[in-house]
Image (cartoon, rainbow, N blue to C red; front, top):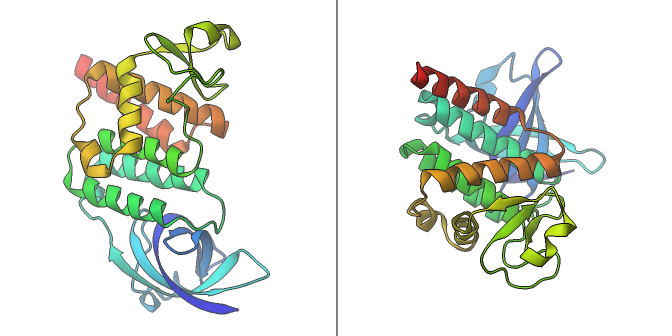
Length: 257
């Protein structure tokens, strides 16, 4: 059993027996890992963090070789992202980001790029009034980081460059050119502006992507395609996405009245 120190984001947590917590973290050095904090519910002062979801912490843990549940001996909060917690839309977006990391990453598969990007996105969300845009950027980047990204550079079937009208195939995971439409009769049409936006976000850094302009039509199609693509490949809709959908529907009905 070896001892390690690393920075983590809290993905989710749950009670364990009467006094302890089990927490799923995404760490900078070890990827996704699970840890048990013994006695924290009985003596919370033993740890300098309340381990709130999507908070950034530094932990010391004993890495066991015969189990994936490691013993966390120390946990210090580094950033609780308090401004996010004051806005229900931001809380929903940040919760979705953590759930997406959990769904797309394998246990103890290191990826410092994901950690740094997620930490940057949370820091920006704390001061930015457009959580929807941050969440859209996050979805596209996470698909790219984890190798699940849709194929938008050329036709996913024949490999030829797509010029003009195209369709998007959820089953094949990318664009279809005109001659390959019959490969998937369920493929849906997609705006060229939507494709251009996705390619821009994949290739550029966070700051540049925040400055990318998108008209309402492109925004709607981006969300529709990304959500449907995630649902198809994860074979489920994430719980936080369901909550966000309900919030959006309520907001629309309220404005309609």
